[in-house]
Image (tube, rainbow, N blue to C red):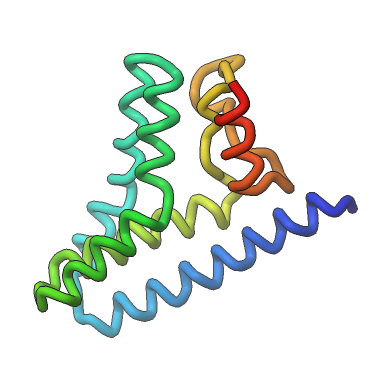
Length: 138
């Protein structure tokens, strides 16, 4: 087992743990599980940009699949005292953690997919730093 495999496994385990924490916190909030189920896959709508081209699709997907969005949304809800943004942020973060736990990562913006957008994934052992280097190189 190579070094990259160990770090990718660590990312997956960390993401699984994060997902578990998010689900527990969500349950403690007495939020609707129906809403959770209905919106769980909503972040994947960020991939609609692939209809335009690969670069736009990858950028949109990456924006919808980084924790920055749910963190900002959740903090906005906490600061304003409005619970809906916090609920939505937890669902969004759960989706991201689930994706990482099953092995999906951010998309390469400069890569050309061989068989469509689903074939371009961050490879095991690759980090977000590698992704940034590859997108800034070209």
